[in-house]
Image (cartoon, rainbow, N blue to C red; front, side, top):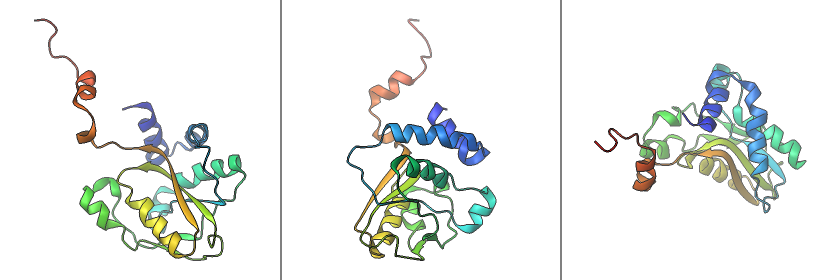
Length: 174
């Protein structure tokens, strides 16, 4: 498993909280110059998943980014109201349907007329970020950007030469 993937999984599934700081530092180093948000919003977990996991990895990362950018982090105003299946267990078409109407804004005041930066750990299909962004825009956000630590790549999009370069050779010159 590549180191970044292993680090994200260790934070997210093995409760290695100490990785939040170095993973956030990677995001800080790669922050695009043009990002200028008024408020940062971590993608929320449903309360049942939060109880099981006991923390929100996106909040841990957003907290560090907010301190670096000197911007507030709104962690209670965007709410996940649907206890959906984990996106990692679903096919792409299922992922696209899974999160419809899964988010609501409890208090729109922090978002009205403001530039919002959504923070999540991994971008796969973009469904989670898209649903959050639609909800925030409906609540009055002027604009919504998204920033993730990593992005998954569909293996069908990887050029064959890259796959071949990583494939172990069954035999060499025999």
